[in-house]
Length: 285
Image (cartoon, rainbow, N blue to C red; front, top):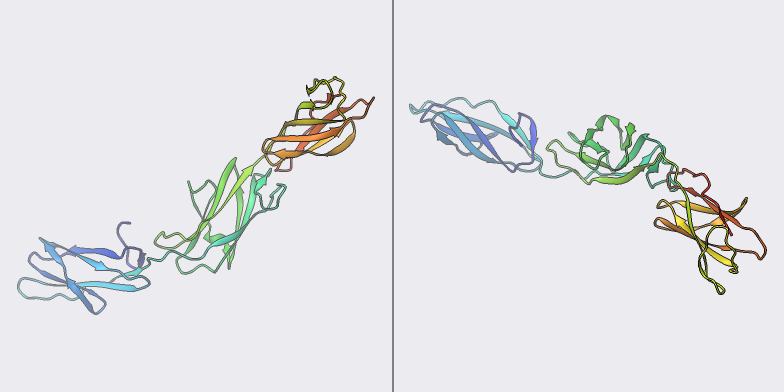
């Protein structure tokens, strides 16, 4: 909003034209050669509300006829282009150069400095630009210089914490096209695996076991906590038993117990950013 410069685009369908004149003058307002109407004169100032049409170039000018009947030459044109339609060009196929997560599209990574690539649905139009935000729209950067044809390459970005990437095409009036968003999470720390419980549900004595207890249950339930989206692997001594079932921040695994055997259960955890933990504490049964 605010004053419109000569040659600028506007998304306002009614612009206020104004200027100065002699007191008592009659001011006529034109769009090119077409007479729009008579301005309102107040002392030595005049004003007129002019209609602006989308995708149209308007050439506003005025003449003044003073109280003595002398008519001026037209003023210099002020050219305004109507632009009430937001861009339709959108961005897709967002990808990080170092997405170390389990999935290639989850945007969970252990690498802070990245290159973000994306595809535009069409080449940028006149006066259109690509804007990008790394913090959910709190601040924006002009990325137009990083666009080649229909490809955006945003190099040297620095990710922090858990935020939302946003990309959009914006035209000269500030109208914004469809916004492409993707949540990312920077995770630089390895997880700490927890094996917190071993449960016996067979025989006379059931319930939670203490490390070092004996059990008559041939299949005890191991459980613990983990980061969401982690992979938890269960061991008995040096033997990998299998992968636990993860639900949110918890995991479970049913482990076989052999009569007369000493079992030393522990787990490792690999989080969604690809960090693998050290071993958890050992639980002996």
